[in-house]
Image: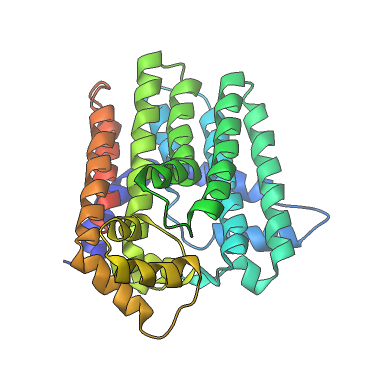
Amino acid sequence: MSLDKAVSKPHERLADHLAGSMDAVNTLIRARMASRHAPRIPEVTAHLVEAGGKRLRPMLTLATAELCGYQGEHHLRLAATVEFIHTATLLHDDVVDESGQRRGRPSANLLWDNKSSVLVGDYLFSRSFQLMVETGNLRVLDILANASATIAEGEVLQLTAAQDLATDEDVYLQVVRGKTAALFAAACQVGGVIAQAQEERVQALHDYGDALGVAFQIVDDLLDYQGQAQNTGKNVGDDFRERKLTLPVIKAVACADAQERAFWSRTIEKGRQEDGDLEHAIALLHKHGALEATRADALAWAERAKTALRTLPAHPLREMLIELADYVVARIN
């Protein structure tokens, strides 16, 4: 079964259900990414925003708000806020990682320059805070501001941990919870908060988003070693070439003998990579069952996400979000 046929239905059902609200969010995004004085801002932003991303994070905000019975329009501002924060982090990430590709297209820093990517990312962060404030909800502001700080903290932690063979799974999880899961969790949590849902429901939504985000990142790290460029939007082995110590490698290093550890030290810690090293790295991952073990972890986190949601009352959107957890990990089937 092809990837599209295998995984598109849950995501498409959610997108179809939220189509009207997402159209309103997209209109708001285009309006707020405009700049009368600096035309490069909408140029750079549009390149990324219009690149065909699945918009999972803003859809989570819309879905959780509706799931909790929200009737107003502030969820649209919060969904746009979440997308702006995400887009800003992508612009900054591509500069940090010196990436040349994003969502199957040349990255903004490659088409323009690093300065433009950083400054436009800063502009989008500022826009996101303007949108948050417009809701008039201090707790929403607190949640999303904390998420923004946590994302940056996770990225900085990754700078020191990603090329250190002493990095273990606990540190990896801390990085992932920061750079990826924090925004998933906040996107879900603010949907419940703006709807004034009961606190246990707000916590369940947070826990769902956190587990979903961890599963999502683990799958991304796994696909770097066994995905296909046309499906992932990046080349197999990009993380290896960028010397990122992701979960599959952490698991293989934990099982490595002295010769294998020397290989990982040369390629990841010291960055002295040669022809054939990627193929050897993948062979070591298979040898120690690191890819299968990583896949099992992703499935466990997806199950954790679904368990959190099942504490909420029955609702068609609850079922769609449960299916979304399956969608995230179906990419590795």
